[in-house]
Length: 198
Image 1 (cartoon, one colour):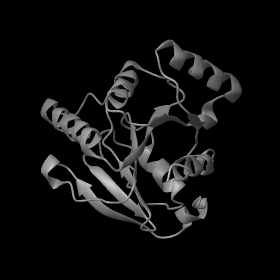
Image 2: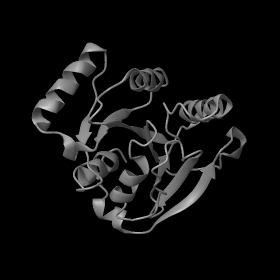
Image 3: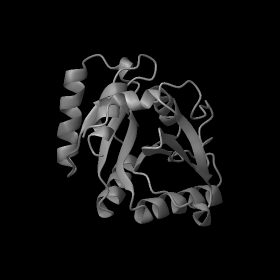
Image 4: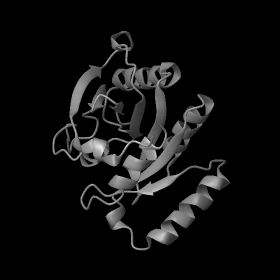
């Protein structure tokens, strides 16, 4: 039976933060990950999807999320907020640790149902986004692309058409959702896209 999006209005809480590979707790609920560049709006979107103002900590400083943060939604599913990638000012060691952590999670989480790959709509799909898509594909992980800051786009129909064409050109085909944490656009569509996989 399809779970209603109303579930996101119920209890939502932080349950674990993982900064090292040996810190992963045993998590038995289905998981939905949020990945993307630093400052793409992962935490803001998680807050919007969960109808909360501060469930996931929002920072205007790129690279602030330094661990994988897990949030439980009504004890039915988990949202995973992953460290951002592509931020040049973090130390080389820190970047390597993040990459190891993320790759370990993707390779070993058998409860990971879907990865929401967040991309800033104003900037489009970049090389490190494509690298991540290949990583997900190579690990047989289901993913969809969530364009953030969609309120900045003039012609959304044309934008989706162009992005779909670009994805096909580089060998990918996946669902696309336009979102805006400012207006709330796309939040319900994102909720439904996750719940229909349960």
